[in-house]
Amino acid sequence: MKRHLIIATAAAAALVAGGTVTAVAVSNDGSAHTASGGQLQATTTAHDAGAQASGTARVQDGRSSIPMQDDDANGQEEIREANAAKVSAPDAAAAALKAVPGTVTGLDLDADRPGLVWDADVLGKDGKWHEITLDAGNARVLNQHVDHDEDDDAQERAAAEHARTDAAAAARSAASHGKVTSVELDDDHRGKAVWEVETITKNGKEHKLLVDPQSGNVTAAPAHDSDDDDNDGADD
Image 1 (spheres, rainbow, N blue to C red):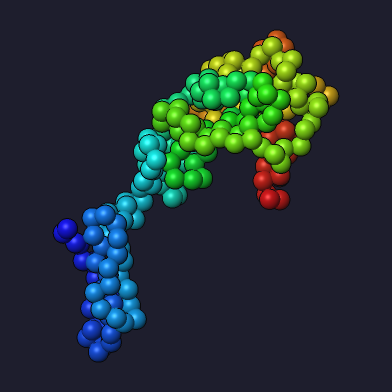
Image 2 (image 1 turned 90 degrees about the vertical axis):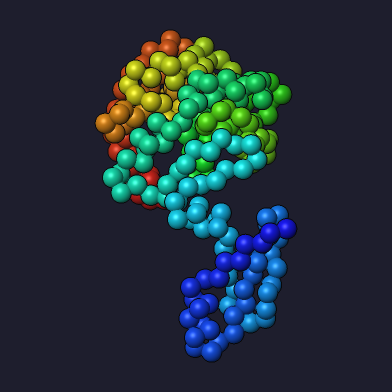
């Protein structure tokens, strides 16, 4: 099988200086073979080098490939993520419930790992809390497991079970304020349960909205709530 041999620039410098170099040939099947003994190894394949140069995340295991850059100099990362997600929050909720029937209590658009995903929390009909990771490009389930570390909050469980407006409906209600990036059931917001929904507009303006689980009415979150969230983030 044809092998591609890539030797780092440093290898050439080492040869000029009289040093010993180890070159590693990488075959098409991904296996590495040492050409000679020494101290310096060059193991980067052309495929990997291209990925590193472009900053493109390569997603495997059947995931859709939504390129995600490491940083965003213009501060528009949130907008880019929201625009890149082909799966909306309501569709992510529906896909999560196909995997685990029950009630979705949280959705979060996440780009911390290779590719873009929706993280969903579901209180299953089996009475257990489930965490489900969905591809934000095609709603495919990438991972799911029972959250054994989740504290069984009776109040949160009751709020989820008795909510007339679910996470998908809360997201649809808030969609007029921008693209939904997060939905979470707060079981004790000023003594009552509410859906907290975060959106972002095309010009980068973020909104935090409250959706009543019973009536579905949408209101803007008080300004100091957002300030508290910012302070919490600063303490982390």
